[in-house]
Length: 71
Length: 279
Image (tube, rainbow over all chains, first blue to last red; front, side, top):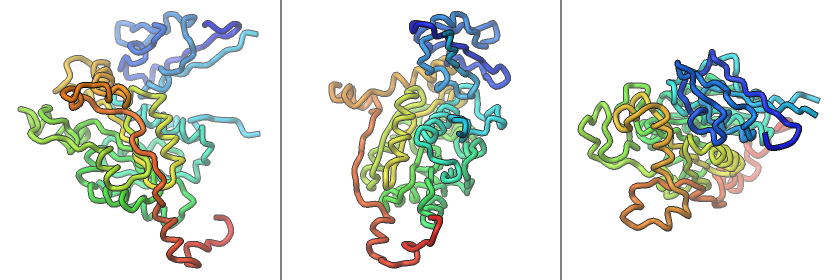
């Protein structure tokens, strides 16, 4: 992440995710990639800019982005 | 001090998973509503979600607010009664395109004309999703549906233009793709005195998408992006191109006196104006 001493934890709730692929496709920072079943994997969390659009654009409340303060 | 639960103060997390199809944007609209309520700090017990029938009509099942799940097309009729019964409540009517404009079309135009202080949020997915993808009053001309396999021969409603003509105080259009705009418009609509309407162009990959948009759920979402243009962008288009796009943005924002203000003025000292303590 660009801001110093900040990191994010991205959690995908596999039980509620329906593999629509929105978080993977529309992430501007290419944080996600799909596994063989279409489930999003958090590939590059350090690229995350904490815009939280994936959270808002997840139709199933399955994505949560939490800021972890490393200070 | 109470912990700030954010959207979870309004959303029943224990009701997950949502019943909607993979790639349906209803959950996105629901998230935006709960986020807007949270930002405005409106307590859940002061909110009533009024719904009718349809995929979007199921939304009240996931809310911790009050809910009234009425009959098909009547979300605004029941909502009007709720608002008149207790004007302190925030009444939000959730309707699909068929629910709001076909089955409840008359309730819709008269709620806007009356300018009753209700927030209507219309999930417009261009067809009747729950019953199998039949064409609805908003299905775009020539689109294929289960009841118009060769293409629908009639143009769809411009929901925003209809709301404006009928007298709504706030009219905005956005899509399930434009999530920050969606939250902003819902927030503005909730704050608006009088009838406010947010039309959310939504995905239906299961029916409309399968018949009209090659690809998957992501293609359906990209389609929303492709068929919409901002007000500024729309003005720059050639006349011939204008009909290919839907304009997004705040299209009406005015201060026509709402129904209850007018009613109170005409009925000074009426029972409604003196509600005793606690109101």
